[in-house]
Length: 144
Image (tube, rainbow, N blue to C red):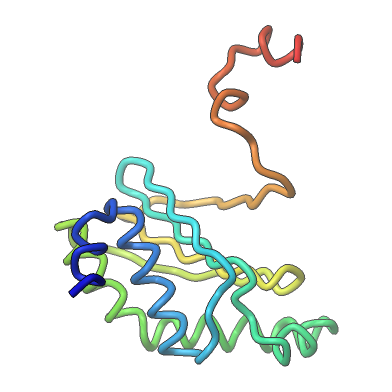
């Protein structure tokens, strides 16, 4: 009952993040350290931080192993993404047109992108940028 109350108070982004976390755990048995959800107009980007198992990270230390891990996760996502698409529609009320996944084997990050047919380029920064810095004019950024 308490879980239902918490879900009803969660933002749409928090609900999508939880759905993505649950999806990752169901399909791999491994829970990511954190999940980030970003929405820009009709593009939803879900980043699963440290989502690879220790064995996958070890395999990814070589170029051939990294390619194997990337292909495995792309195929796994392609074969099982329908349940996450349904969760996203249930939460947002909007149908998902396209979905793709990219895996960064060095950091163990999995990025899932849901779009409406546009090209998406995703860059994960090495450090966070505060909202104040992001929204500041260039002159204000140079003073800090």
